[in-house]
Length: 563
Image (tube, rainbow, N blue to C red; front, top):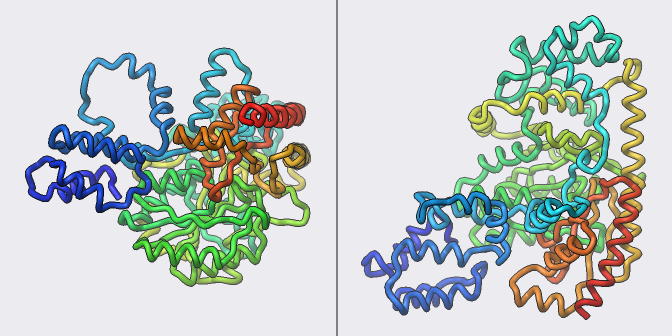
């Protein structure tokens, strides 16, 4: 496959006579010899037409590669929309770093959660339209209140001592346990305070809090030395994948559907993606047979699978994996010397009373002790929802000590994760305990959020399933519904003719008609022939009930329009 770094080598390989340009005969030989999958069909005709007019230079070939490897026609529209003001102020005709010689990995990277539909929603909102953003799991943005104790401690950590913990009125303004916890956190951070850098792996006391949390949760030892505090789970995942991909034949197995951070980072870091399909009819289950089949095929394609991602509870699918499924994934990875990446950021978001969250670390220690594992957690989800704090952690288990040290070096290049996020992570894993002044009020706040999320999950899924032509699996956990939508054949044909996914057409139509912003299911990957969308159920219950009615009225109107 051609990427930015390989474009020169590809050009040289096609330039058989070494003339420094491509003749029509050389272009014809190239066109006839390669696999055309993943390249726009019209691009091949354009290349042949260009070569018939004159011999192609390296720069012209690079520009053709940019056009030929575009994911979809709407991609450049997104880029232009986001940079319109910059483009209008441009004064130069050419730039040293441009579309043809920049990182083609970055150019090809896609992140559907912030894609074309969201860009259009932002534009409509700027024009005065009221938009209901259900595209991203961002609880506070749609009305969820922050947990009081956490914000009290964070405020006291940030305030100068004389205005906070040492103020004469502190004990009357804040509960005693908040003041005590802030003093403890400030001491852990050091005299320089929250505005200074910390250890690159994170404040030692906070990492100890995480290790204690894991040990209490799983019943097995955890070491603070194996914990990295990170800017959310996403940066931790990027650290690990950066260390994983050594060649462009190295691959990551990811569930289909998947959270797009994985496919985005695979593209950015020059790796390869191997999807394993979750069985929608079986509640988004995974089987060892499916994993083995995908691995065999990837090896036949010359790829080396080095890691596999598991998301539990599922995003976008909302399933909570049972112990047997977790053990199947662990055995598979152990058997084939594959590092397992366990994304567990929704571990507290379990709504099905017949299900429980079981960590992959617990499964590993008890059932597959030689498993190589990295687990991720975040302050953005659960009942906290502090997305903007960028707090999170990863724990390494059975990871090569040398690789561990190199990931520390990588973390060091970013100096440290945000201190507010580190404090929030400590609070997440060590909240008020029974007997503390804030325990009862904190527990009541969490219970209110949980019970409301549980009702909203049922409201959304039941409402979607009541719409003819839409079906949705139960949201056992996480924050999302991922319905399948039967699309009118004419809409499918229209989308195909325009080179876009039909659920992208559907999502844009929904946005224009109702102001509801969802993410097309195609952005997460899905079984061939399926279409749908992902929506959160985070908005307030009244707003969510109204949204369900709008989903129904829009679907009827969309089907009538394309009948």
